[in-house]
Length: 163
Image (cartoon, rainbow, N blue to C red; front, side, top):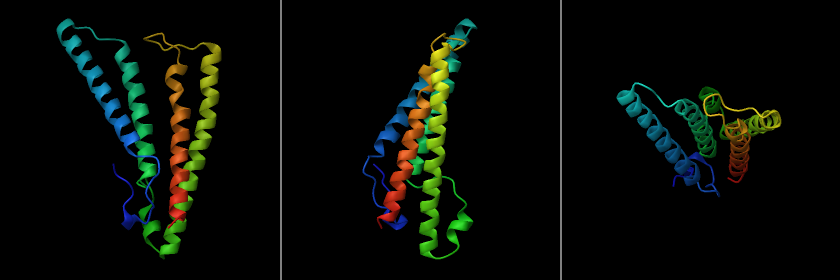
């Protein structure tokens, strides 16, 4: 399990990062198996499973959000390095904390707005085109994982202040 390194100046995480790591491994394994099964069926029967594209897109989106959660917790998210590297240590710390707050704010907003989207899908009974499952079964993960990313960003903000 990887935590923030001491040279980063970030205290170790309290919620294990292995959670996101194992989720990513399991999601990637499921994606590989589904895609492989579709290739084999398509090769032998000249037809494909209609549901594999929907499931694959869903798994890739969830994997991206889980990876984003791990990146935020490790303070490895995208930043403008030039602005971060110029200046004193106090300025760098303030910028890193500001970035963590901005990240948290963005994902709280995204989570709140996506809850409305999920509610509309549930209320109007939207279904997926190929499988016919309720759309909200897939969409519910956006607000949940957005809140997880916001939580990891707030944790990073707190850990940066605990130096």
